[in-house]
Amino acid sequence: MSGDNSFVVVANRLPVDLHTSPDGTRTWAPSPGGLVAALSPVLERHEGCWVGWPGVADEAPEPFRTDGGVLLHPVRLSSADFEGFYEGFSNATLWPLYHDLIVTPIYHRDWWDIYRDVNLRFATEVAEVAAEGATVWVQDYQLQLLPGILRQMRPDLRIGFFLHIPFPGADLFRQLPWRDETIRGLLGADLIGFHLESGANNFLDLARRAGHEVSGSASTRLIDAHVHTDGRRVGVGAFPISIDPTSLGEGVEGSVEALRASLGNPRTVLLGVDRLDYTKGILQRLLAFEELLESGALDPDEVVFLQIATPSRERIAQYRQARSRVEEAVGRINGRFGSMGHPVVHYLHQSLPKAELRTYYEAADIMLVTPFKDGMNLVAKEYVACHGDGSGALVLSEFAGAAIELPQANLCNPFDVESIKRAIATAATGLSTTPEVHRERMLAMHAQVMEHDVDVWAGSFLDALAKVES
Ligand code: ADQ
Image (spheres, rainbow, N blue to C red):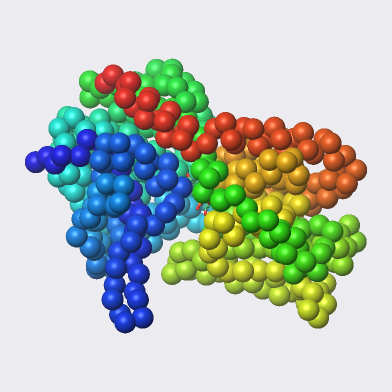
């Protein structure tokens, strides 16, 4: 049982969207995205294959090739699979557990059974398309059992796994009723990558507690740590993800001025851009903004806060609750501090094209990135990438992975509204009183992001995977 693809990426989601035209004709089209852009060159060079769910329950196109020659290979999921595997175990069990219990994880045996079953089905598809000795790169928390299953089906494969979200310490992870199976599943890989050394070291600690021999400790973009299991050596390391700066376009002349004019030319524009997720701390930053208006530290005639929030996982109760709390706060703040035709908070519950986001990033004097916990946070890096002239300021949560690489940001503790307020106020005054200091800090962050883009991320992971000797 083997196919002819020497490089296979497997992710929960296939990079395609279903388009329905006015006459009802339905077509599947490739959809762009950071991961696709990063992996396209390798996928195209190897005429590679991407295995994943096409995003619509109970439907799947036949496998097809993109213009670049990449084979898109769908895995069909029923709506019951989607509920148990994706909404249930992935997003109501693992997501809150791995994000430090910001909401309480639900441990549901039926969801686990479906998660295991769907991982098995993904593995079966990969085993069919991968050539003898192929490299397979498994993405993220939805597919943690896949490396172990695939290793049993196809011991000839070179398997890498990358986790896009934080990996918690033993005190939290040990809550998971299926913790041993999960660790065993991951250990089927030859290389396991995390964003941060802390996540990688958490994993090594758990592997040790589960009775595996561990050597070394985690480094960034290098393999200095191994888990020894079943006569194999599994590499473990940190590979901080980044962005493709070209995906944001080049900016349109005059668009920033036009945007600021449409907002009434405020002195200071604050911006938040997030998936509407309870981990992102959107409500907390609104409360900080409200208190700064209340105390007079910010003047409602001079400041505007733009919050752009992409709809996300809306069938899960906690996401609906997070949305209604945010929307209630937006209404209250505008009711208290806005005037007719001049809201102080502009709120969009929409996804915008990247080129349009660029105008918002460029126009924002202060970017607010205040997650309670985040694997990395690409929004912070996108903002920094758009400020190559040294303008602007970034307020960044200490609990975002990005804080490790961007220590020059105005760091804050998102659990402490006073800390968010201080970071905003320091950024607002600093931009006018010490512009040179801010400029240097922004330029340092810009250089860091431009020198460590998504190609560096993918390249360093794949180089390390190629070198692992198990
Ligand atoms: P996310 O939790 O989705 O990613 P993030 O890293 O910020 O978080 O990426 C969000 C992406 O969506 C960004 O590229 C951003 O531009 C885009 N986006 C957000 N709001 C948008 C809007 N309104 N319109 C259009 N685009 C919008 C997960 C982890 C992160 C990790 C990434 C990558 O939770 O910690 O950084 O994966 O590994």
